[in-house]
Image 1: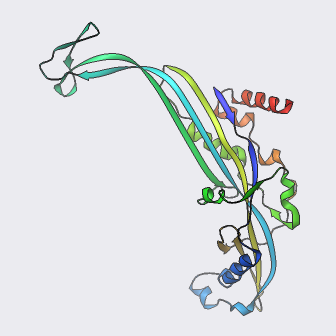
Image 2: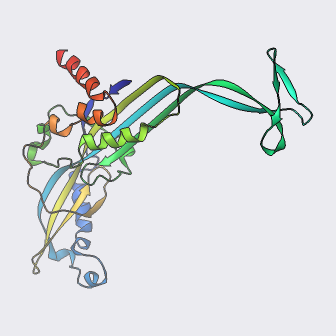
Image 3: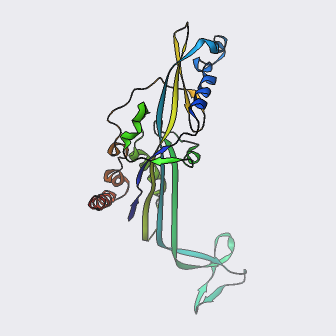
Amino acid sequence: MDIQLADERLLLLEERLTADEVEQKALDRRASAFGSGIGSFLQRPKPEDITLVGRQRRLVPFWHVAARAVYVYERSRDYTVPGSSQEVTAVTIDGQRRELDQALGGQRAFRVSALEHCRNEFRHESFVDGTSGGAVAEGAALITGPLSEIGDPASLSAEETVVVPPEQRASFVVRQALTEVMRPVQADRILEEAIALERTDLYYRPVWAFEFIWQGRDKRAVVEVDSITGQAATGKPLLGQIKGMLNRDVLFDVGGDTLGLLIPGGSIAVRLVQAAVDKK
């Protein structure tokens, strides 16, 4: 089995909205952030009663994983070939006479053994939210914009930016992708079996969180604004920086043990590849 592993890349998407545009979107949403429904609508605060008390830039993760599997194989099959008309009782092919028997439906037919040469290729690509594990519908569009590759994950937390570590680990999303492309095939002899992990990319998208307080009620609410798409929604309270989670070994935990669970000998192949990389 041929196993190919993609480079593990850490990528940062650049903001497409200015700071003023992002803040204005949060201000437009501030009143509705204090609740929804008929009851809350009747008690919704006036914009002048709401004060902006804090803001925070967050980097939120999502995965882009792509995998491909190719199987080339042979198998023996018997083919049933009908005669050209009902009166045909036998045919001679390459000097060999073949008798036609009654096949299904009453039509005369003969059987011939053949060796089938087969090729199957399966692909899977997914964009997975790094915290919830759900699909990122706009993922394909997001990665077409300006971005930069990050070498040291610790550099992401510069200028008080809060970096949210992915709860969905690389090993989990890779297993899901490999499960989609590793299919059983009916074969007498497998000539080629190749598994390629084409993408293992961890993207961070910038999201701004604005905390508002409702004066006189002592109520707080947070509005999150995606500075790429401009989407605004009620968000989570301001976060503290999470230490010790931003290193490549933790973010990209795809190793021999992960592949070995799905691919016989996969762990050996990964160790050989890693040894070659380390030596280089």
